[in-house]
Length: 100
Image (cartoon, rainbow, N blue to C red; front, side, top):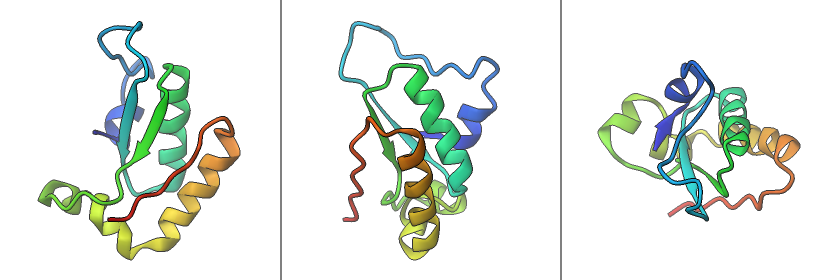
């Protein structure tokens, strides 16, 4: 899991994984600002990730302090806004939302 802050504050906008030949590769993004989630998804796409996963269910204390993870289950408007922004920029991805 990477937070939107850690992705957006990365100097090169580059999210590195160990071996480019390893595919499929997924990234889980955690945040609560839809426009930042969308920017991070674009960065992940440019870095050749095959799957972009939004953290909407993690119940850990650190996610709750950051207002993401399970907190987003109570903020449906944020999730819907994030989904709409992601649909507009990442049409080649299948967007699946799992609420467990």
